[in-house]
Image (cartoon, rainbow, N blue to C red; front, top):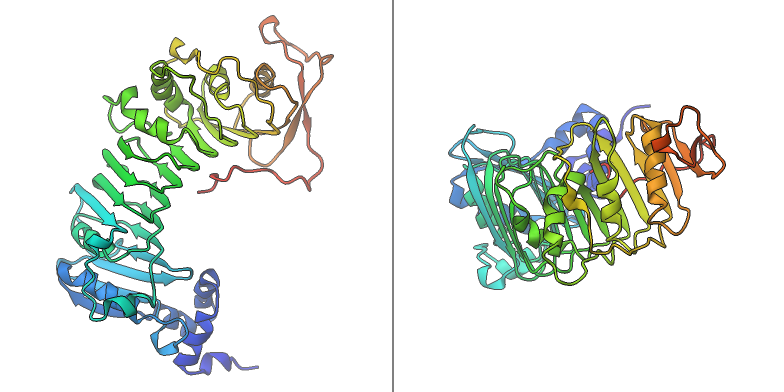
Length: 431
């Protein structure tokens, strides 16, 4: 039977692709060479840095998912300096701007200042601003590999996105300083793997989700008391050795009311603990329900920082602890003896998941220490390799072999034989 579908006119094939989910549409490239060429079809334009914002604005304004002649999802703009931006329209008003191809200048740091959502800054020079932009209003933007040759063009483009709610910035290798301002709409901000970033300033009154992965830069956060989701993956350590706990105070206040949090042990030890002593009122994460604690590998596992942090989390329901041998660590210090929240007991904890522990004795010892701050008996699961799952069961009569006097423990490890038991994951795992 012949492939009669592939013989249809381009207009009909474009219509078929437009009806598919974005992830499924991409898979059509594997059907045949015709489908691959069809997907890779992109509008191409050349011009100056000043022309780029206008060109992408016109591309978005012309896009119409229901019209096969106007539903091309890809657009390439070639700058005269050799840079290239690939714009891809995805469903649900998402736009990807990828600068990874074209000319890449190495060892050239740059600053990026992004201001959007402010009607006073709206500077789109499209021939028909109001009606044309309503055809496609960007709500989610992913910036990839912006460099010093294109940063001004990016700043100009974002002034056109009045309805942007989600901003994701990844792989900007030589981004040194980043300033983001949104007066009305921005709800979600993700910054991943910008390893030269030294300074970050965020001003967004309605920000609900903030996710960061990379070296810890110097922070300046303004008015971020609505955060519900915070992913602070600083396991690579601080960008500067001169970073002090007072520099982290704005971040600490911003994450105070979150429901979901990822935190590295060293961040708590070096930056949060010293700051807590400066707060006159008792400081607690009253709303925190789910925590991913990224720990470092040590010859003798130290659970005290985690236990100290848990005393600040009276509403915690799910706890995930991961041992990462490559995670940054600091010297042990007595400053982690937290007085704030010292009488807190966790009454709602239902699940504890331990990953990457090389010694079962460390797992059982942590379970024992958790019993000091937990009033219930949560389900405790452990996995050293991410595959074999074990359950830690509390048994006061249990006496493990070769148990030292210092490490008495009433928990025993039992292999989970029910393969139907789903291995739980924190919402931030896999990002």
